[in-house]
Length: 295
Image 1 (tube, rainbow, N blue to C red):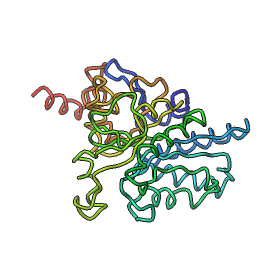
Image 2 (cartoon, rainbow, N blue to C red):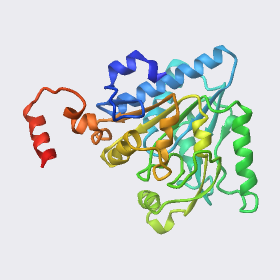
Image 3 (tube, rainbow, N blue to C red):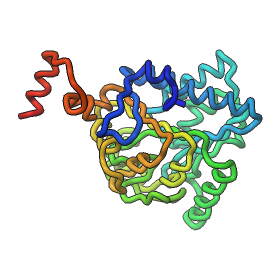
Image 4 (cartoon, helix red, strand yellow):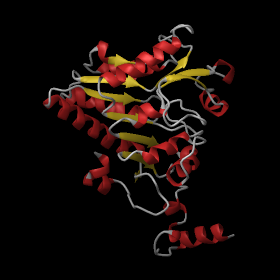
């Protein structure tokens, strides 16, 4: 696990501070971090295979995990990593959404991972954006029960939205929420607008695993890349647990790691104002930063 992996700590930057409530590791690049996350997943798959047990993975979409999936595909093709014992549950899907639509998460997962590895099709679970409105509630209950039938998720991969959502659990989501239909926040829809060629084309609803579902995973790794995520990363790692920032619920999970690049970590206290948490070597750059901060 990353949390206990000495190699991960040596590769990235990890320093516990009184401000931080979630374990996190900072890397110079998302590519290096993605490689190591893929290695952890591969190790878990192999370990579960040796035990003759299914490896149950919770998977995310969006730009953040693409490099992780690319490395898993490479390991399958070049190193013989088998996905024959892997069962996957995706976090979410837009609703309504035809699975053959290029914007569907069904399409995304097959393009970036499933078409390139030897996973059994019956072991792939992605919320169905075409289920009828009348059947939707029962469908969500069944999705939740299917996850539980496998004993929960062994590993959950997450991204984070600017609203602090994980999956599509928008602000106001309850800590014990399960798989359900949800109305998307306007900011979430704005962020998706370019992919849909305009906000008017972005669905207003989605199906998502709940906060409770995610927090029942045995291991959680959240990816945070880029300057646009810096503000919400700080609120999540250093702020109070609140339904206004759903990702803060992960503070209460004892095996969660946030894996960040330098830009996404830039608002953390130990990065932005390190003199508040430790003694510093006062370089010219740090002096300028301090002067600007005191102003």
